[in-house]
Image 1: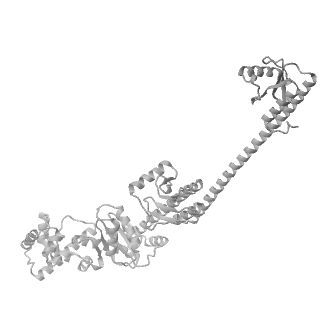
Image 2: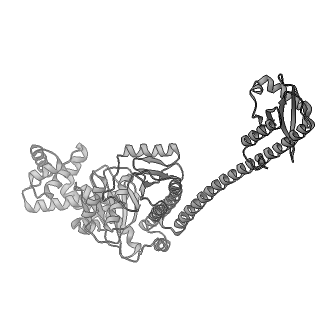
Image 3: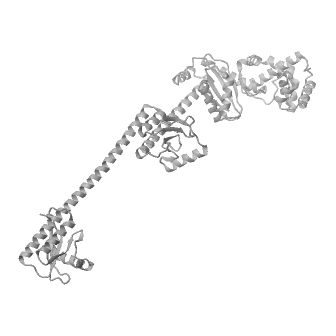
Length: 547
């Protein structure tokens, strides 16, 4: 009973050894357990060759047990150890002489109890191991269930944000609630687009463009969130293009697996949201461009009106057309973006479209157009900008007329060598009167009468006498202002004016003559602009002579 109450193999074998010795002059030589090897061996049974010999003899006698030979022992016997599952080893006892029948009986009973005790100990050990494995499995399963529940909660929270259309701000707020860390949403260039949580800086830091691109390349290369100083960042890239960045502000480095999962899933939802917003913006921009194009050419007024209303524009209000030109003679996306931002900031409107190298804007606002021009220059960062402003259109069908006026205003201003400014067609004065004359034959005859000789000379010599005369008259006869606007010296200007007197035969000191010449010069610029507007530009600066 003492032996079967033990669960420790070593203690059981120690009790068995003591019991064997108490029966007589016998000793426990060793215990060999199948699949487990030797236990509680005497010094004489530690040598490999002795063990191998005994194992071979035990295998020969199998489960019955029997005499074995070992060393110089007078008697040696291998008793089979049995359990309910069968034989599982042998207990080897040696002595100086063969035991009596009663001693052999006691030894067999002892071996039987030892076998039962060892089998029970093995069973308890297996149960303990199974219990430990079960506890370990339960712990792992609980961790997996907890992680799955956290992932599900993260997925559900961010899915609700996406379905509700809360945008980048809603995504930042959700990730902040899930991680308890401040969250920033940035565009590709590092500009802050949304913030959630405490600690928002008054002036959001933004690194150099080269460093930003290197950081984005690193995140894309590693394909997982990375630490950048005190932040963990993930990119929103639905395809190969980075649309934005989601950042956890974590200077203490306490973000764990759950926070990383929230950041990664938040970046995925942000990528889908930014892609959706980009697609909507591109679609709306394309629709706006189509509407503007139709309105400018005056086709399908009803259809364009309906599409404009669907986009949220009220074309029943008065509009006017603006034409914005920059430095370049080719299409320039920089000018388009600058005009769009300036128009948005000043409330001028968002109906705009690039046409050639210019940008055309439909505006229902009445603002200081020079202020609009200055804002565009600021957005460009440098360079030049001119704006032609057409007259008010009370109905969409009149927008082609306003568009023509805006272009004509720019052409007249350019022909008169005017500087950068916003030119309103309604403020052109005599230019406007001349431009609206339907039959220009009389104007052409008048221009030929006063400027014909100079125009012919300029055409033959490729000179700039008419342009020089125009600037001289527009500045009121001021030598310094004229020379500065033409970028020539005073001596060159005097020479040109003398040539003008000689060729034209006009006295430039006579007030009446100067009035007629100034009117003729303005008429000439108007005729040139009208010919360009009608699609018949000519390299010949002379208006066609009347017959």
